[in-house]
Length: 609
Image (tube, rainbow, N blue to C red; front, side, top):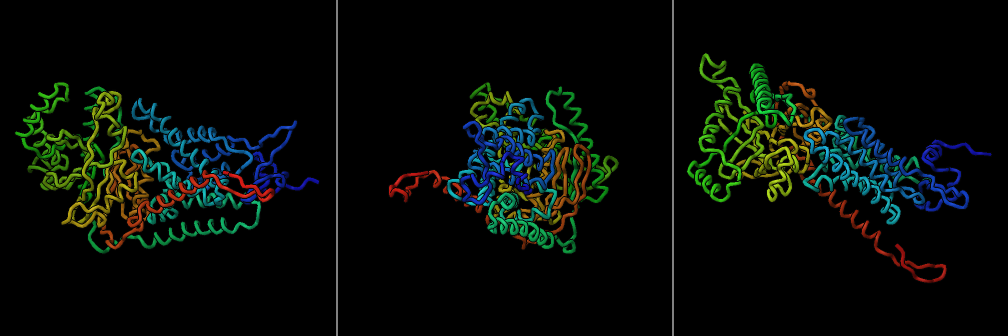
């Protein structure tokens, strides 16, 4: 009589396993179901179709992230990847894992192709780079499970988070698309990010998925370890999440608030425009920002913030005119093919006109000409130029009430292929193939903007994507006379995502900004051209946000942040994950070292891997 299949047996049967032949399977020491081997005409037929679990794993991971964005699917993606790592008799074809991973990441990063024609070349290259991590995930996990005997429910999360750490570090870091980032709309589940960064959430999510999979697929009933891991990880996510909500609430009665106006523009970055078309678009965007700034003043704003590169002027750093003339002559005499330096007259006129442009923007000036006699402080993203060093900076400039520069922040962590080209200084002809004439210069580091007693730490665009960069800023103390930036009241990110025309890059960027708020337990104010501008509280809740590709304004009240807040993330950084990665590397090396074992059946000694 044919026995009735259980739900687990039917699940395995749909993937190509035959539950009726479980007793004939070898390799049961892990306590998991193994694939049966059907013999037909004297030949073995592996019943697991390699593309099926590979497609399932890649599809679930892709669907959990924008542009699809069903965040809860992130708990199922590790379970699907575990299917690729458990079977012994049906080894997974890693080429299949790569091709499905390529499609997964090309879907997630489809916006790479939008800014410039060169993006169509970089799109599959970036997708292939990320697909290699899928292959390493499966290959490394299988090796440690079957050669080193590590428990599957724990091995997969360890390998997963170690690979996310590596891609957050290599090539200056590309941490977008981490597993934990899929939950940025579920703040209760991401509070553990202040323990050891966003990788903490990725580890717990993968641990939940892997433990659930092993409990579901396990053949033996002695499975208390994965059950304990599942209960512990869920308890930590929900319990610590509730505690974080209650604990990290900034009191609003300790001091007068400072009202910050975040101005969002809606100008897409487009190439191929004529000079006149570009001038008209720039002027239209500038006028709309001025109108929104006037509205902000009417609503009592204490400081107005514009997004990256939205102020169409040049901030010229102070310089010595005689020294500049000498440099011009030296450059011309050395090589006529060098970039022609701007004339001294042009540089001085730009330097003198900037305060008037700022005052015009904020509506201040003589009676009868401008409506206001006193200005409002203005923080804008713009280009800064150092004539002596011939250096261009991507800057956030803080203008005081008189329209003069009070402080500058120069972007430190530049984006390769976006703000500079590797080897571009050695081979200048490379810039002819890129949408930039030359690379930008990195700045010296953190800056602190003090506005009416509030301290804001600015970052520019992609810097807020990399958690270690923001952490290093907050823990740095460049000026002995001032306290470290960790005493700041809010993070301030100015960005220009107009390159991506409202695509899912904006959602992924917002997800990173949410995690920066939780990791550092600091409010995060984001002002971004084309969106998504937002106010994020220290618990990662998005208090308010503006729609994509729409002009608008957010009014945010900033209160003093308690100086006693010092999250564990500031103490340990990525240290625990680097230690975990070192343990994995040692385990992999040990699995490749031949072992000498005794064959008790005949008393001989032989070497085995």
